[in-house]
Length: 554
Image 1 (cartoon, rainbow, N blue to C red):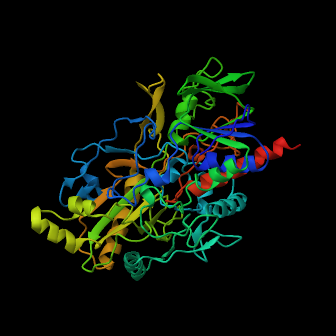
Image 2 (cartoon, rainbow, N blue to C red):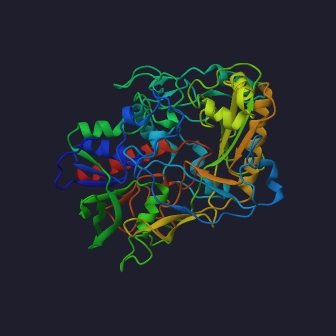
Image 3 (cartoon, rainbow, N blue to C red):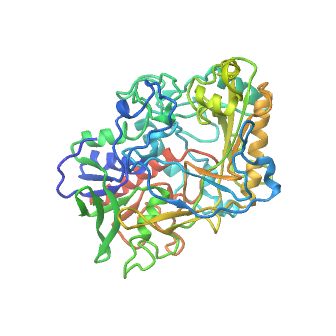
């Protein structure tokens, strides 16, 4: 990502993921000078991604500084009452053999494009009723923005990302069609879709930021299934290929990788600069407007590390809510073998979706929804190494014969559900420090009874779909019940109208510091019922950009 010689930008954005990228494009396109600082490196799809190499099965590449430093605190003790929803594999046994929930990590990418670099392209709107979780259902918090207010910004985000989606979506009203027609189901996914329908479930094409035909100088998808490993061809709508590319092309935006923000400086009631670590040593970057788009772990960490005499508990933390209301990814996956050679290693990772239980009151007896979809690629069951280590046991020639016989027959179904805020789930500062001497973030997470009830419902449904598809008993199940393993995290700088209960207002602006904004998933008052958050992060960022532009043009 090339840079431009801006001397003093109008806007300084920290982080180049979905929120920072969308803001950069909108503001630069409107004539403002924008500087984006990214702590991680820039990735070169042709050189860094391995789809055309013998080592294509390796996960998304780790480059120096491409993961932010963090730790997870001790997780909760588990009782025998959740034994039916724990993680296990038929060959290796329990994934979590002890009685304490295990840490499998916060899975993210720190680099130009953020975690959109390894996402599957899912581009979801929230369910309309997810915006009033507190007033309607008595949990989480209400959003200070409505579905109708976000709808034009979702449309714009879909256009910029090149989303391919279904002709109709009864649960999510639309004022215009998706930019591209939906992708067809793969042969294996279609088998699972028919099984789900036989159980009375509704199945539709998933909305994906993956072109189903050439779009916006990007080729159409070749269905290699490698989205999570990085898109080498550049068709997937990761934000480096969409917003950031266009922002830099305006001539008014520069993207500087390898620059890590350490703390925010204040003077005269405003944020006066950002002290950053660079290869040449510490440097203070300034701009009239500063926007944090570092994600729901690193954004609160930066604010807490910016404590001063004016803000002894951390910048923007007058409410005491910075770091609180942390919500993780709640997931259950079941995988089983089918008797037919279905070629299940081919196709898009998540080409269909079931929204039947996505509404906050759709699961009987449980508040908070979920969704279901096929997930062979997300379960990493697309290559022989995974089959040899997780599906087929044995050794030598017999093992090879069994591997050949089983390859392409594994089917997976995943449920992803609502995660409600828990008073013991939060981001704190650790006693550990990074290479620059700054405390790293500490993730503390706890699941309540509602989460285990939701996971149990998700487990029953995933198992039922596999059985209806004609599969044998599962050979593997993975569950949030005993494993913290999150790709999407939310809520640590909650937005809302009341400055005593929220960190920022409905535009993402700090209630205390008028030139400081937040534009990432830390804003979310609730997590939604399993929706991927990227499209909503982009929509909120575009809305914030328009608000800033309205102020800049009296």
